Image (cartoon, rainbow, N blue to C red; front, side):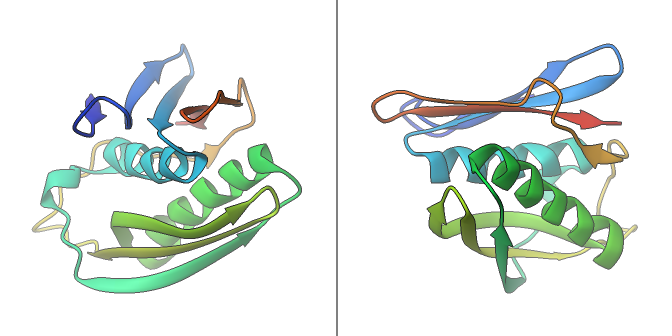
Amino acid sequence: MHSTLEGGQAGFHLLEHPSDLGIEASGRTIAEAFEQAALGLIAVIADAEMIEAQDERRVEVDAQDYENLLVKWLSEILYLYDGEDYLLKVAKIESISPTKLAVRISGEKYKPEKHKLNMDVKAITYHQLSIETSNGPTTVRVFLDI
């Protein structure tokens, strides 16, 4: 499964691992790479094409550094699904620093008659976690415990 924005600058693709599944997400900025990682996570959980942006929420995450911030951000998306039956459609980062993330998200409640689920994700791991930033483009890699 692949997703790329026009121009090939941003997107995500899934990485296979014997006991885990990985997401490698790219963007022109670190914010865009974090947004794409969230969309990659949702694509693992459900058929993203069937999700609509029906309601908007604001999410804030605090961390020690960008790596911890990425894991906590994706863990929040996973919590919204597991704990509140909420499926993300759009993530727009308002601000990001190594220790804080503020995001406007939109999506909808999971409806079994509407949404097709793909895979159960147990947790976001630190296994082989990486964030690569060169002058501009950023690529993040994170593995999921499935």
